[in-house]
Amino acid sequence: MKRLTWPSWLPIDPYILLLLGTVGLAALLPARGTAADVASGVSTGAIALLFFLYGARLSTREALDGLRHWRLHVTVLACTFVVFPLLGLAARGLEPVFLTHSLYIGLLFLTLVPSTVQSSIAFTSIARGNVPAAICAGSFSSLAGIVITPLLAATLLGSTGGGFSADSILKIVLQLFVPFAAGQVLQRWIGGFITRHKRITGLVDRGSILLVVYAAFSEGMVQGVWQQVSPLRLAGLLGVEAVLLAVMLTLTWYGSKALRFSREDRIAIQFAGSKKSLAAGLPMASVLFGAQASLAVLPLMLFHQMQLMVCAVIAKRRSRDPEPDLSPSPASASRIAVGTGTRSD
Image 1 (cartoon, one colour):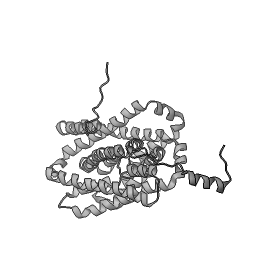
Image 2 (cartoon, rainbow, N blue to C red):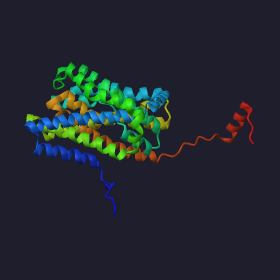
Image 3 (tube, rainbow, N blue to C red):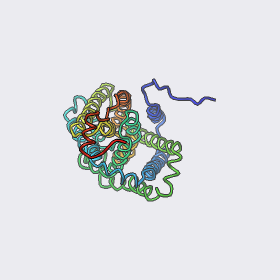
Image 4 (cartoon, one colour):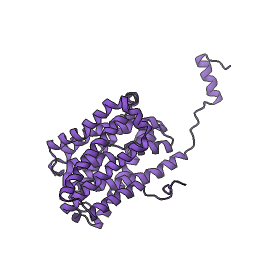
């Protein structure tokens, strides 16, 4: 019996369809009363499990080895946590013509979350870039985001972040950092098992995010936050995000060229430095924004799908680039041989 596969010609990630279906379910059958309490408790446990798996998957030895390429990682972190937030702050001028205040807060939050891991690695591999660098860059960004994203949110969002407070930072520590640290401690014993069962852990990852989305959007429906969004505002948001993605893709590619990185490194920087993680952003938003989380994560969900579609096209085009000819010419080879005292056998 043939296994069903998603048609490669369809531009929409099937997981995005699941997310949209979950949003639709929350709109039609939102959790209320006791069911809402149960959904909230389950999603909290799912978030803790999700970050525990992140910690258990990240090999401490690989992370330390990756520090040798520090210039690349500093560049990616600067794009993720400096350039992106600056562009988010600049977008404040688009309010209220293109964006409502709530959508702007969601857009600003989008610029604060860490980079992706899986898609950065996949696109870097397709484009024949530096895959080990992409692995380390995405992992470092996710790890740094557990600390940097809440701090940036406290600084840039303040009291507008849906009740953001010192209590929110404590929740971040308990729900995200503590499980992640526990996973790191146990990585030596369970890391191999998790690596061998990527399919199961992948289902846990995605299932956890779906639970978080359902709980957040259910609460949003009960609170009536969706009455604040019109089709025209959504179109404006999509246009702003398209410009944001185009700017970051351009800056990461040509900026890394100006910094004299190799082609392989530039590919890793472009894909790791221009993306934002839905998997990390959704749990953080549910903690930081409470009842407003459904509206706050809308820009992130739209940006996530947009970046996947655009970067898939770019990765395929980069994969068709001619291989660089690194072999020396006969004349230069002879000069090297004379200058170094080497001889051919």
